[in-house]
Image (cartoon, rainbow, N blue to C red; front, side, top):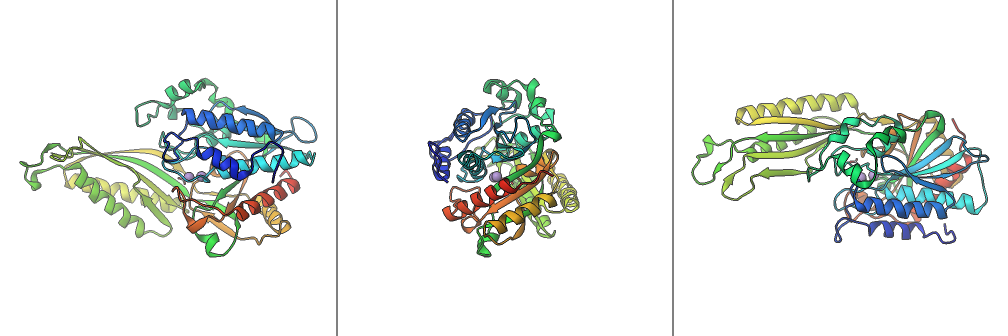
Length: 409
Ligand code: GLV
Ligand code: MN
Ligand code: MN
């Protein structure tokens, strides 16, 4: 996997892990100075690997390795470079740096193919900053919703302002969209983020589909008051109302097959030990492999929340911040992946993804597929994320075989 002057995959992962908003944890949100820094570093690696690199109008970093002649349609490889708060080192980044190493290998062998190869590091997949997801890949797929530009982050900075500060002009965002004729397929390598491959003693697997997700922001408005004087039955406590809502959400999701729900953020105001909370705000992340089930559960939980708030005389405000349909990977790409697994000496194994991936957004543009790699104890979105180097080597070999044998569809 070594290339002259190109850091190894491990060295790249370690270098990216140091670029964080918080020196004690790995957090790298969209349109921060850390985002800019990783783009510069990844662009440098892309150049060393033999690619022409550029930053697109939404802030993705892209590298292109021409085929037999310039301008041919491309096989696109990649994943994302943003992270959740207190992230692991591999979620997203591993797919980008492995792809760069595959191109470096082609370049080292002096191999040009009957198609171009592009590597992309998507700017925002997690939605950590603006509570959406797939911002980078949606822009490339041509499905970016311009209304997202008005979204505010936790410091009340809009996405539009953040883009300006980053040096990107919002008017150019539509130019990030690629034409269907330019991209033949998109392949993403990613850690599994779950325990199935490990349980089955397998280094890698082929993804069949990606679960859909809905994200909501829930605000509950009660009435702040004195903690010592207002009898319990006369209160409109926003936090107690929120607590009842959260327990109910879990109950509803448990009663529905293949459905999970998570409240990952909550805040209350005014936030003092002797004041009844007058305002509570929390996020809801709802996922299911079946679009119809997710929609049914979404309706059910909205009704249940309204009922609880009405009973407790609190006002409920619900905002949908994100919605993604569950998406199947392309049969054509899956077949070619099967071939790459066999040719590289790895058993084929098929599994769905409960997590979201840029692949889902890219399926609006082109044929898509994913390689999952085993990760320790299935842990992800956690600094304990860990992958064996021999599994990374497996992923690299499979991806390289896929590229070398790729038949544009
Ligand atoms: C991305 O990691 C997601 O599934 O939230
Ligand atoms: Mn993630
Ligand atoms: Mn990811």
